[in-house]
Length: 599
Image 1 (cartoon, rainbow, N blue to C red):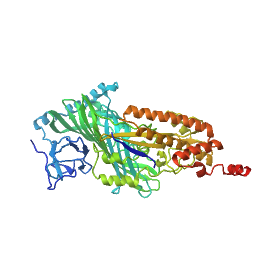
Image 2 (image 1 turned 90 degrees about the vertical axis):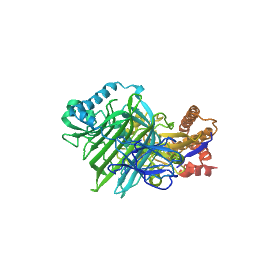
Image 3 (image 1 turned 30 degrees about the vertical axis):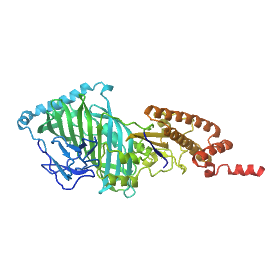
Image 4 (image 1 turned 180 degrees about the horizontal axis):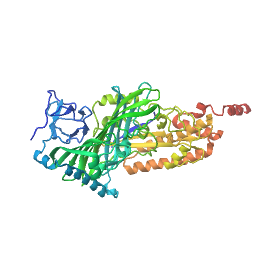
């Protein structure tokens, strides 16, 4: 894989603590419920001194690497008292959070069931009224973290981790724009299982609107239908920051596979949902589709937990975790059960990432396709500590290295819905030449994809969707640039016969963008005090020059059939990249022998 990375300098104690050794290499502990001893999943852990954070995992464990002498760490979980730890040479092995005490006298007041129905219906009604018109002023962006893990028979088979700029409207995620990502897939008995569109699922599920892909929840029903389909029960009431929170359990009266069971936490002063947990067992309303060797998906259990925060009088997502277990029935009569745990956290609404200079085209397996375009940025993953699931970080790194999706690069071919997931991945430039398969097969879907993505294709019988990736990260008063030359199989096709000349032409077309990338690097190195405007100007300048070069190349070589022009362009590419395409593909051998004979 060819890429470039370079640096330009520029008063109730609600917690029990166990342990004796000094904690100087970070904080590792398990968060549990003090009363039951059960782990608290996705508890928030935040270093008040360094602004770094993390979440506890599915077993309650967490790791916070940057935990220095004098640091204070806040641990919080809705319905429990917050606690703050101080680093005073004490190792915290287990942290037991104390549940907030019920306000018994007030529970009796609010236990009237009609009140609970009216409360939920009013929250829904307020949302519908205030969001009847989409206002840009209500949309917020923020740094967002995402992790997904899948296990089968106790083995990790899938790991995906990414950072995004998230776009959020009240209660919902609207879009996710990727900054960095990494992923690994481990085959099990030659079978690959992936959840390729899970990030999309996070914004596909709407809290207040019904969706055929998910069971119904109480906030999607008016009061009359809510009474018809659900039983509500008040299970707790407590104060949080002087606001009264009611904890309400909801159980469907019929069709449990069609309706979510769960619990909702409601701030009755501000009339908003603070947290909701949705559970469904053996449901046939789910967003999962079988593909490849999977004949059918069944036995789907899912749990979705959403937490929200009040910001400038609007309610925005804080975190969403989406956990599901399912059974895959394969075409060869084998069955397997998979368990997936995914979480997304909007951890900073006041800052955004500088996004890569790159246009991601849309197609199947979008999460994995996007990550396949990104160079693996070791510096970013080793040094970014502002928010991550750090528990078992070394094991995660090893899994990615061994099963990275960027290792396997099959031959380039015309895509179809039945194509392997790897066929959809971006291909990076490298001295090893692109290989091809079934490029001549006409596929009208490719032309539709080109039009849908707004791509400009210069001919009617081929299109080579090459792209230049540029990203930069500001870190410790330095700027890290990462670049990569790619060809996108989505939209790429060539209806010419795959002769040696055609193969050389396609690779030389790709080589010319690699030369542009190298020229861009040299110009980026020369920038003093780089900023977004300077970087944008340079990137656009080099793309403009590249487009002019490509037009001349196409005009000169006539799809690889013009001998003299191919020799001249091959000389340019050989000088800049060290790749000799004429020698590689043994072009014009008979013609050169004839010329030599005449001479």
